[in-house]
Image 1 (cartoon, rainbow, N blue to C red):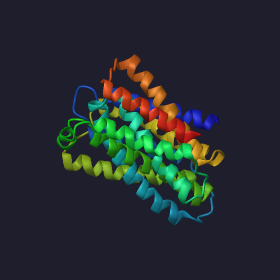
Image 2: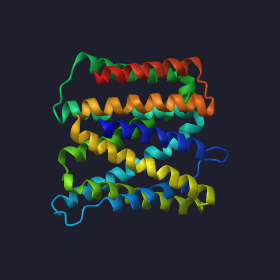
Image 3: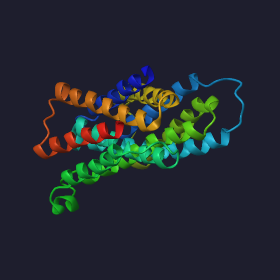
Image 4: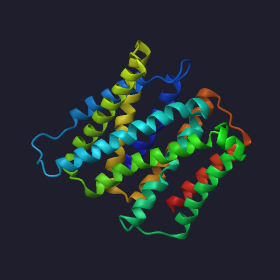
Length: 277
């Protein structure tokens, strides 16, 4: 349980730092690159020396897939916190819990129930509420399309942790995280070169502040998965993160959601509670 609580706190801090670091200018990719550089560097400190190479290929392959998903989810989060606020963006990113939950119920044969089925249904309802008028959906003004992508990307990225926890070599857990962040760093650096964006002092500062909780969120979540079933750990992790980021958005940034967004946030929390039963 301590690992799960620390994962919640770290994940909430990621959203808060992302919100502060993205204020003023357009979201910049060098901040994300510095973030992944810090994550990769810290992960090297936790590598176990003398570990058996069994499963190293699996760790590399899953690390590559995880790096792509982590970067994609972070790019979506960076844009969404500016357009939809911290609370709603974090809520939908963590609502991606339906992805690893479904994986847990299917691939890993964890128990299903009416509550979890209802939770998945409410997930779809929350997206429908935000979608609003179909014309707004097509024009992108409702923000529902971006949030739906954020949910899918965040869920798939978190699902990689469950997949490695189930099939990977526990002794190579640190190597797996190192590969994830190293691959994300390479991809993000290539994106910076293409966009011709060089890191500024602000990018460096917020990249470091973002990288530390980002790394430990993943590490603590992996530890929690070794102690708690995925169908319990992921919803609890998501609920706790949403509550913390909602409070932060209100207290630190004075965020006020529209009536439709408040209803969607309430439905999201209800869905996560049901998924956690």
